Length: 173
Image (cartoon, rainbow, N blue to C red; front, top):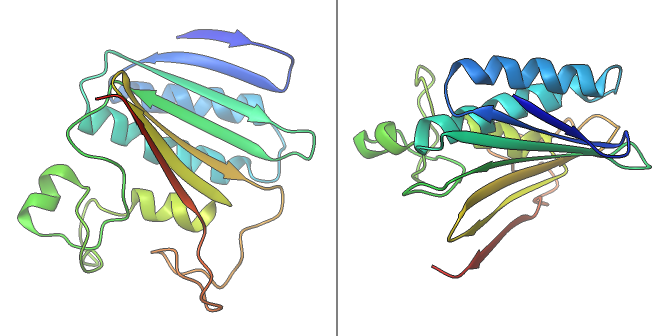
Protein backbone atom coordinates (compact mmCIF):
# COMPACT_ATOMS: atom_id res chain seq x y z
CA UNK A 1 0.00 0.00 0.00
CA UNK A 2 1.24 3.47 -0.91
CA UNK A 3 -0.33 6.42 0.92
CA UNK A 4 -0.30 10.05 -0.17
CA UNK A 5 -1.65 12.67 2.24
CA UNK A 6 -2.43 16.13 0.96
CA UNK A 7 -3.75 18.70 3.39
CA UNK A 8 -5.07 16.54 6.20
CA UNK A 9 -8.48 16.63 4.53
CA UNK A 10 -7.62 14.31 1.66
CA UNK A 11 -5.64 11.11 1.47
CA UNK A 12 -5.06 8.56 -1.26
CA UNK A 13 -3.78 5.01 -1.04
CA UNK A 14 -3.05 2.37 -3.66
CA UNK A 15 -3.84 -1.22 -2.75
CA UNK A 16 -3.08 -4.48 -4.56
CA UNK A 17 -6.09 -5.69 -6.56
CA UNK A 18 -6.81 -8.77 -4.48
CA UNK A 19 -9.39 -9.87 -1.91
CA UNK A 20 -7.05 -9.51 1.07
CA UNK A 21 -6.59 -5.82 0.30
CA UNK A 22 -10.23 -5.03 1.06
CA UNK A 23 -9.52 -5.44 4.79
CA UNK A 24 -6.43 -3.28 4.50
CA UNK A 25 -8.48 -0.59 2.73
CA UNK A 26 -11.14 -0.70 5.46
CA UNK A 27 -8.53 -0.30 8.22
CA UNK A 28 -6.88 2.59 6.36
CA UNK A 29 -10.20 4.43 5.92
CA UNK A 30 -11.26 3.83 9.53
CA UNK A 31 -7.96 5.27 10.75
CA UNK A 32 -8.24 8.31 8.46
CA UNK A 33 -11.86 9.11 9.38
CA UNK A 34 -11.41 8.43 13.10
CA UNK A 35 -14.48 9.62 15.01
CA UNK A 36 -16.37 10.97 11.99
CA UNK A 37 -20.10 10.27 12.50
CA UNK A 38 -20.36 8.38 9.19
CA UNK A 39 -17.12 6.40 9.55
CA UNK A 40 -18.89 3.03 9.82
CA UNK A 41 -21.04 3.73 6.74
CA UNK A 42 -18.00 4.90 4.76
CA UNK A 43 -16.06 1.76 5.68
CA UNK A 44 -19.00 -0.50 4.74
CA UNK A 45 -19.48 1.21 1.37
CA UNK A 46 -15.76 1.24 0.62
CA UNK A 47 -15.71 -2.50 1.29
CA UNK A 48 -18.57 -3.06 -1.17
CA UNK A 49 -17.09 -0.90 -3.94
CA UNK A 50 -13.54 -2.22 -3.44
CA UNK A 51 -14.73 -5.83 -3.47
CA UNK A 52 -16.61 -5.17 -6.73
CA UNK A 53 -13.43 -3.72 -8.26
CA UNK A 54 -11.54 -6.91 -7.32
CA UNK A 55 -14.33 -9.27 -8.39
CA UNK A 56 -15.29 -7.70 -11.71
CA UNK A 57 -12.00 -6.32 -13.05
CA UNK A 58 -8.45 -7.52 -13.42
CA UNK A 59 -6.88 -4.47 -11.83
CA UNK A 60 -3.43 -5.17 -10.38
CA UNK A 61 -3.73 -2.04 -8.25
CA UNK A 62 -6.77 -0.16 -6.93
CA UNK A 63 -6.33 3.49 -5.92
CA UNK A 64 -8.68 4.88 -3.28
CA UNK A 65 -9.09 8.56 -2.43
CA UNK A 66 -11.01 10.01 0.50
CA UNK A 67 -11.77 13.69 0.99
CA UNK A 68 -13.39 15.28 4.03
CA UNK A 69 -14.91 18.66 3.19
CA UNK A 70 -15.10 21.73 5.40
CA UNK A 71 -18.69 20.70 6.24
CA UNK A 72 -17.48 17.16 7.20
CA UNK A 73 -18.94 15.66 4.02
CA UNK A 74 -16.99 12.53 3.05
CA UNK A 75 -16.27 11.63 -0.57
CA UNK A 76 -14.68 8.28 -1.40
CA UNK A 77 -13.44 7.29 -4.87
CA UNK A 78 -12.32 3.79 -5.89
CA UNK A 79 -10.65 3.41 -9.29
CA UNK A 80 -10.08 0.21 -11.23
CA UNK A 81 -9.00 -0.59 -14.76
CA UNK A 82 -12.56 -1.25 -15.86
CA UNK A 83 -14.39 -4.40 -16.70
CA UNK A 84 -17.10 -5.64 -19.02
CA UNK A 85 -19.92 -4.32 -16.83
CA UNK A 86 -20.78 -1.06 -15.10
CA UNK A 87 -22.03 -0.54 -11.56
CA UNK A 88 -25.81 -0.65 -11.17
CA UNK A 89 -28.42 -1.61 -8.63
CA UNK A 90 -29.10 -5.30 -9.26
CA UNK A 91 -32.72 -6.23 -9.61
CA UNK A 92 -32.46 -9.89 -10.55
CA UNK A 93 -30.48 -12.92 -9.58
CA UNK A 94 -30.76 -14.69 -12.93
CA UNK A 95 -27.84 -16.97 -13.87
CA UNK A 96 -26.07 -14.19 -15.78
CA UNK A 97 -26.39 -11.86 -12.78
CA UNK A 98 -24.61 -14.36 -10.56
CA UNK A 99 -21.62 -14.12 -12.89
CA UNK A 100 -21.53 -10.35 -13.32
CA UNK A 101 -23.51 -9.00 -10.39
CA UNK A 102 -24.59 -6.08 -12.54
CA UNK A 103 -27.91 -6.90 -14.24
CA UNK A 104 -31.17 -5.11 -13.61
CA UNK A 105 -34.58 -6.73 -13.01
CA UNK A 106 -36.34 -7.93 -9.83
CA UNK A 107 -34.83 -7.63 -6.31
CA UNK A 108 -32.26 -10.32 -5.45
CA UNK A 109 -33.55 -13.28 -3.46
CA UNK A 110 -33.24 -13.18 0.32
CA UNK A 111 -30.55 -15.86 0.27
CA UNK A 112 -28.52 -14.50 -2.65
CA UNK A 113 -24.82 -14.10 -1.88
CA UNK A 114 -24.37 -11.08 -4.14
CA UNK A 115 -26.28 -8.27 -5.77
CA UNK A 116 -26.74 -5.87 -2.86
CA UNK A 117 -23.51 -3.83 -2.84
CA UNK A 118 -24.51 -0.95 -5.09
CA UNK A 119 -27.98 -0.95 -3.51
CA UNK A 120 -26.27 -0.31 -0.16
CA UNK A 121 -24.16 2.46 -1.69
CA UNK A 122 -27.28 4.03 -3.12
CA UNK A 123 -29.30 3.80 0.08
CA UNK A 124 -26.64 5.08 2.49
CA UNK A 125 -24.99 7.81 0.45
CA UNK A 126 -26.20 11.30 -0.38
CA UNK A 127 -25.01 10.81 -3.97
CA UNK A 128 -23.05 8.18 -5.82
CA UNK A 129 -22.02 7.40 -9.34
CA UNK A 130 -19.22 6.37 -11.61
CA UNK A 131 -16.97 7.81 -14.25
CA UNK A 132 -15.83 5.46 -16.96
CA UNK A 133 -13.32 6.14 -19.69
CA UNK A 134 -10.74 4.26 -21.75
CA UNK A 135 -8.42 3.87 -18.74
CA UNK A 136 -10.93 2.46 -16.27
CA UNK A 137 -13.82 3.19 -13.96
CA UNK A 138 -14.03 5.30 -10.80
CA UNK A 139 -16.95 4.60 -8.48
CA UNK A 140 -17.58 7.38 -5.99
CA UNK A 141 -19.98 8.12 -3.16
CA UNK A 142 -20.64 11.09 -0.89
CA UNK A 143 -21.78 10.86 2.72
CA UNK A 144 -23.04 13.84 4.70
CA UNK A 145 -22.31 14.03 8.45
CA UNK A 146 -25.96 13.39 9.34
CA UNK A 147 -27.45 9.93 9.16
CA UNK A 148 -29.19 8.90 5.90
CA UNK A 149 -32.97 9.35 5.69
CA UNK A 150 -34.69 6.46 7.53
CA UNK A 151 -37.42 6.02 4.89
CA UNK A 152 -35.13 4.53 2.23
CA UNK A 153 -35.54 0.95 1.12
CA UNK A 154 -32.52 -1.20 0.12
CA UNK A 155 -32.97 -0.46 -3.58
CA UNK A 156 -32.89 3.27 -3.02
CA UNK A 157 -36.47 4.42 -3.44
CA UNK A 158 -37.93 6.49 -0.66
CA UNK A 159 -41.37 6.96 0.84
CA UNK A 160 -41.52 10.48 -0.58
CA UNK A 161 -40.75 9.20 -4.08
CA UNK A 162 -37.55 11.22 -4.40
CA UNK A 163 -34.43 9.52 -5.68
CA UNK A 164 -30.77 10.27 -5.23
CA UNK A 165 -28.89 11.22 -8.33
CA UNK A 166 -26.59 8.77 -10.06
CA UNK A 167 -24.10 10.25 -12.46
CA UNK A 168 -22.28 8.61 -15.31
CA UNK A 169 -19.79 10.10 -17.69
CA UNK A 170 -18.13 8.24 -20.52
CA UNK A 171 -15.06 9.64 -22.27
CA UNK A 172 -13.44 8.05 -25.27
CA UNK A 173 -13.73 4.28 -25.87
